[in-house]
Image 1 (cartoon, rainbow, N blue to C red):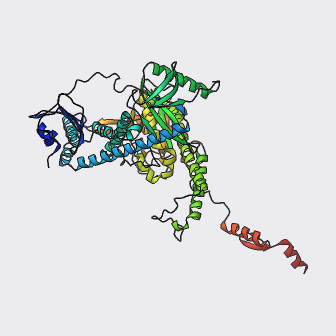
Image 2: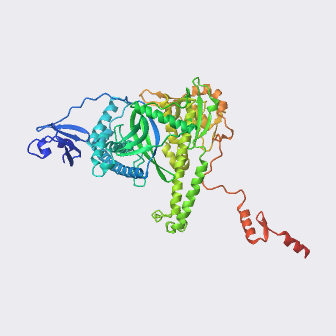
Length: 615
């Protein structure tokens, strides 16, 4: 079996299948599929993103074209501005069809990326590259190893350019009418990035999107795609998607409220940036709110985001739990900031929404048990292989819509609370320190807390905003530091997770456990060893020198890691303080009405007692 390289080195006559040289342009994604396009001066073969020039006698790699200077510098800041749209029923139907067509293109690109990734990993050259020494970043060993991996990936066509070429070939027949060229390329890039993250061990295996899940957005690569803003006298009036124009929401007539004023200012800033040719790309996003679809446009502009909150110059150290963040802040002179030290509940204020969600879920479960009893065994447990409850009643469908709306409300409220918390912390400083935790693994141990608080999303937002503000985000290892076991005197003692207060048996130091760990995070620094490897270690001398100033602010009565709000309660409501015997006796008294029960012992009624005494 000949390889791709051997096939490319064949004679041009045998490649084209003619007796004479024909000036054709060949584009193919697999050796078995070749598509001829347009006459050119010579034969050019694009093989998995590599351009080859085929002559009658030999095949040589084409010279690389001269790169044009970038119009936009790499790493420059960008900003996303959202604008609500006012679609008609016809617009919603058109968008639904295009999103469904985009879903099919995405699934096809995802399946092709997975197949190419599996072929690449099965290649012996991949194992050879994997066995090469890694070395420090940007070293000779690291560069050679990356080059070997790139060669293997290029051989099997596992690259972003190759997948974009594959997506362009999918635009045939009816798909071409619903999915633009740039939209297909962006979908291919998203699919390749997901598979590439999975192959590198940075994410889970990507899943195909079914019809009910679908796509939420489609975007173009630049401002010259099918999705473009429509201006009338330098005022934004709508968004043109191919041949469809969707109008934007009109501005409020009286901008008296703060929200209306912010919307008007945001619209004016967007119009000025579009007029200044600062638009990078446009997206169309489809959401479901209260069971009804809604559309909005996202404009990515080449400009800095507006500064709405001032930032400080201190250092923030956070010890994060499943639902609570313990924060210790020090200013530029390593002095404590008392009003900033304490515990922050990540999602404080969504308990009412969670209670309503649990109530509807129990209601849906009762409907399921009443409508499909064959799905449950004799003990009331759901059968794993049974799925009879597919055609729900209108009441069941209505409950599903309400549950979906509550999930959306929780997500939106959680995002708002995260933004407020991050802005509050960055007002004290932009240098953030925290432990390098695997937040995804917490979902197995604390599923509901992680679902409601989304601690990984909160920390990612905190690090992202800190870096954008010019600060540094430092994540240190937990194995080498062991902050929860360490004391300022250097003594280490393992504590159970239920012990929330630190009491050293060596020096008698006392402090709240989470706040104490966050205090130590201020003095963790990387130390480079003789072999060139970096190890995170805690400067105990520096921590001991400043502990006297921080000690009064690290105490908390009872070790309760919650600053405000009532304690959360999961599951069903708490049981009454009265015993089961009294509850049973009360029910018996109501049914019979002849005796009164006190403490579980039947006592005769007063009227009965008086009659017996008279007798």
